[in-house]
Amino acid sequence: MDVVLGVQWGDEGKGRVVDAMAAEYDIVARFGGGDNAGHTLVVGDRTLALRIVPSGVLQAHPQLFIGGGTVVSLEGVLGELGKLAEIGVDISRIKISDRAHVVLPYHAAIDRAKEIERGDGALGTTGRGIGPAYTDKVARAGVTFGDLYRPGVVQARVAANLRANAALLARVGTLPSEDAIVARALEHAATLRPHVVDGVEYLHGALEAGKRVLAEGAQGTLLDVGYGTYPFVTSSHTIAGGACTGLGVGPTAIGRVAGVAKAYSTRVGAGPFPSELHDAVGEKLRERGREFGTVTGRPRRCGWFDAVAARYAARLNGLTSVVITKLDVLSGLDRIAIATAYGSDGGASEFEWFEGWSDDIGGCRSIAALPGAARAYVRRIEAAFGVPVEAVSVGPERSAIAI
Image (cartoon, rainbow, N blue to C red):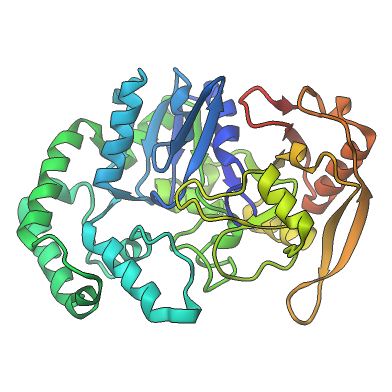
C-alpha cells in the first residue's frame, strides 16, 4: 500500500496527483477527514469537485474506498454518488467502511455555535460538523455506518446527543426533531446499503490477494490534530500514520509515501502562516492560482514556499518522494523566495531568493525541459524536503505533469 498526502496546510492539489496515479492501482482508499476536504479534478473540458469520494473515481479501473477513519455526511455522499452516476461513473465501485462515522444535522449546528462562541478566536472551520462528529467518536457517542442498520442504537444515540447539546443547539435556530433526524438517517442508510462493507475484511482481503492500494489523505500535514499548528488544525490525523489508523492496517503495509506540495504556500482560515505575503505578490498568487476554497469558496492566504515546514513534514511522514504542484503559477515573477528560518515572533525571518522565469511552462512534460531558473527552484525545494521530486505539475489539466 502506498500513501499520497498533503505536506502543507491542505489544498496542495492532492486530488489531481491521486487521479494521475490511480490507474496503476486496484483500490484508492480515503483514510481520514470528511466533506470539509474538497478536491477538484480537471480532465479535458470537465471539472469535477469532490468532497468525500476518493479522487481516483474518474479512472475506470480502481475501486474506491471510504475508510473507517473518515466522518461522512449521508446527504453529502448521496449527493456525490448521484452526480457521479449522472456523468456515467459506475458507482457500484464505491464502498464505505462500516467503521466510518456519520455526520448528522446537529453536528453542523454545534460546529457553527462553537465558532460563534469563540468570537475573535474562531478557528475558521468549514461549519460542516466535522469536528463535532469526531468529538462524538472519541466520546463513544457517535453513530457508525454499521450502527445505521440497528435502528434502536441510532435512536438512542441521537436522543442522547440532542439532550447533551440542547443549550448549545438552542442558540443556532431550529433543528429537525429527533424522530425526523432518525427517520432521515435510516432512509439514507437503506439507499447506501449496497456500498457499506466490513472495512477491515474488505481492505485486508484485497491486500492478501495482491491488490495494489493507494491511500489518499485529506487536508495537509500542518493541519494534523496532533502535530499541526494546534489549535488551528483539523480534527483528524492527516499524516502518514493516519493511514494506518484510518484504514486499519499496520505500518508494515505501507510502501512509498509521496508528499504533495505547492510551489508556494497557502492557508485557509486562522492560524500561524510564517511566510504569508500581505502585498501585491500575494494577491497575484491568489488570482493566478485561483486560490479559493473548493468547499467554502473562501480566499486562501498566500505566501512563499516554507522550507522549515517542508523539513518538518518530511520527518513526520517519512516521505519517500514529493510532487510539486502549481509551478506554472510562479511564471512571470521577477524574483521568487523560499522561507528558510523563523524569528522569535513566529514569522519567517530569513529568505533565500531565486531568479524568476517568464517562459510559459505549460507544455513541459519533463523536469529537464523546464527553464533553468525553474529547475533550480525545484531542486531547492527537493533539498528542503530531503527526498526526490518525482513530478511537477505545470497546469491544472490531468496531463500537465513534468516528470
